[in-house]
Amino acid sequence: MKILVASLFFPQLRATHAGGRFVAELVRELSKKHEVHLASRIEETELSGSEELRPYCKSISLFPYKKVARRGLMTSVRLLVSYYRFGSEVNKLIKSGRFDLVQVEWVEAGFFLKRGTVPMVLDAHDIITKPAWRNVTISKGLVRLLYYLIYRAIRSGELRTIRKYDVIVTRAEYDKEYLRSMTKDAVIEVVPHPAGLDISEKTYNRQKNALLFLASFKHRRLNVDAALYFYQQVFPLVRARFPDATFIIAGYGPPKELLSIGEKDPSVFITGFVDDVDAYYKRAAVFVAPILVGGGIIVKILDAMAAGVPVVTTTYGNEGIGGKPGRDLVIGNTSEDFAEAVINILSDHTFAEKLEKNGKEYVEKNYGRDAVFTKIVSIIEDLAKSKRHSA
Image (cartoon, rainbow, N blue to C red; front, side, top):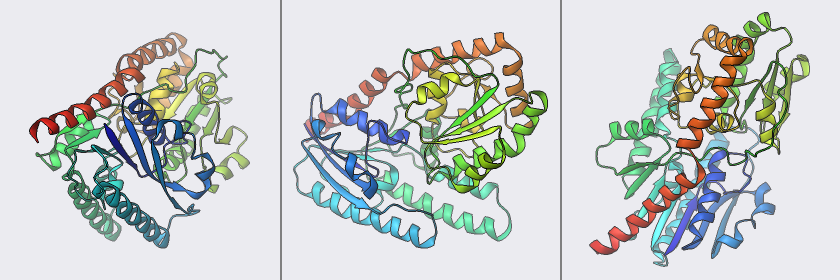
């Protein structure tokens, strides 16, 4: 089968964001039995690494765009223009009739794509309407009205997009039900993100009272807000009980407002991008993920659990994971509850070991790599087979 994979972001086997890694692994998996053709937007700074998927692809079509230093009105317009240009070029590929199936990655990638004559799958990654609605609920006055108008536009765009596809793939049951509340007609399948792709069998000594938050910060404001929230509202409560506690903020693209904290506070370490995430996870005493906005499965939490690190997060952080609070991870929805959860783990080694063991087992059972990619490849193959039989 000839499969066109159209990706909004360039997939990389060592990507700085989980979605890009997922698509790269999917391309590699599909190539075992099928002929894969990749079409992708790619940031100009990533062009040097664009060859790593060449062994798995019959052809690769790249559509470069300039790196955005700071988001604003004009950069948002340029971003939409790049989406439109990408969509136009992919439409030409679809119209050529060369492919048996089209696999589209990210909802935004589908905004400007037209319905083809071959089976089409949309891997949503995130439900973009959810965080848009969350912004409405937490704002007031004229700002709330502005966010509401943005929400209506995003909801309308997401609905139009998902109706073009034969199958929609989400990362969590929660996201499936959210989409189902928007439209009853779509065929929706759940394929979780595989956890622990970068976790090895190596062991490392825990750093006493070291709290880790690892995420991608470039263009991911919700991760910046999470780090700031923890530092400003939770970390002081933890340090009141454990004065030697440290807060490690690791990950790609920390903005100046985070970097300045590390410069002023010796108990905070801003690492930037890290090659060996395995070591960072396993050296931490607690992985903290105070996610304040829902919008999909939080892969870094799964990776931390796979590495055997006790996790404290919020209801939003767990909504796509489904771990049992108190058994697999701990939930804290207020700054006080979050701090108490962290303090309990640091104070009670038996409780910490229980979380380490249960969290790791839960992830291995529900988010193992082989099970995840077997499922999504089966969805793709079954759709193509059913369409051939009905033709």
